[in-house]
Image 1: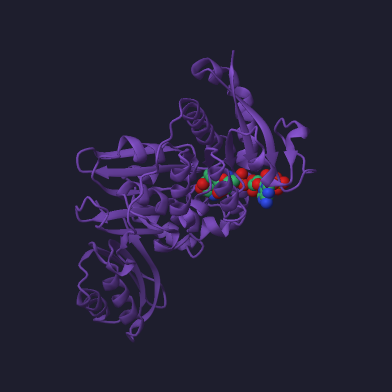
Image 2: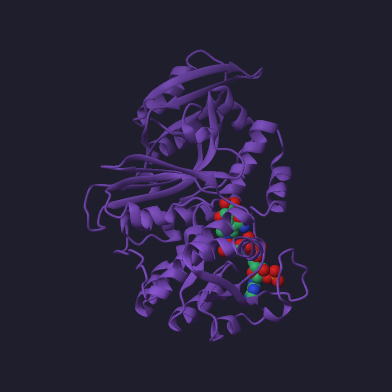
Length: 432
Ligand code: NDP
Ligand code: HSE
């Protein structure tokens, strides 16, 4: 006889709706491989009258989410509402009632992860969140399990589907920023408030989650330096293209030092980055994501796949649901590795190579004056191009890697230099 595990679903939008459809499609295959039948017995939504494309029994639907958590027949709670509250309280209540929880909520985990991990551990049940970082890509589980013993130094990648979709559309098809964002929203990639995507908050939350697990230290959203893509111009994109680079919104989490007790410094940042076209990340386009992981013994690993959208995300959620169901039946759970609060290295101290585009007067000695300012801040120039602009000249520099504060110091001084009309572009460049 089939062993039925009953699911309470919090939210039935892009991800929740796809999950309902996927459970219907995959039910017998899951029964066959695990002996478990998944049944959705309660679904909370905000609006009961909203039309939904997924098959939902109207008797299971409620607008009172606490009913899902309190229903004694619910074995596992899946949270795909998003945001901090009421998701946080609902998850804490579910865990306190001894129910495993699966969530895709990166904003919540990046802000309140420690509280939730501790609550799951106290209750002795699973808290699984594979879908919270990079959609369908298995990255949380590899970091939590397969790479648990590895000395990881860097986790870096493209972890926001919306911004990668927008940048790809602008760069490859010449779309406008507004049109590309509207399409990403229509396709279900964007957050309810797309500011979270385009200003780098969403990628920052994912970076915090991955850094915390990878480096065994507590990293929160507020620890992550972030810039988004809304300030990028078509000119930045075409300059990068001409120089042999693609602009990507990269999340970069690095550990400095080799201490094994979570006391090494950690730097976590999200910003548009010029990626050389021969680097594998440069060809990750559309809603695809990719994460590079570097370990002392493992070397480089790369994870690639769909980072956003209903079905890809529901695939990761469903994997967690089946895992939680099996653990529940076996009386097991897997503790989320957690450590002390991370020592954060500030953006000023983090290193990159840089692209700098300076508009100047076209006069004798100007190039050496500008190069002198750059060199005076300890920056070494790797390449330089000069173009006439009609009313002056444009100097485009790529530097070798240096600390952020050196470049910011150079920019501040250039802005005060009389022959400089303005700094028209500045981007970090991914080095070797
Ligand atoms: P949606 O906005 O499409 O869906 C949210 C759902 O939650 C809706 O069904 C909504 O009800 C319901 N809801 C909102 N507030 C309440 C409430 N107070 N009580 C009960 N139900 C409520 O979001 P997504 O499906 O896109 O995202 C869900 C989560 O998954 C978020 O944490 C998001 O960050 C994460 N995620 C999303 C991905 C994506 O590609 N979309 C990818 C990876 C993670 P109603 O339908 O009635 O409005
Ligand atoms: N809004 C997110 C993105 C969804 O575009 O990547 C997936 O987490």
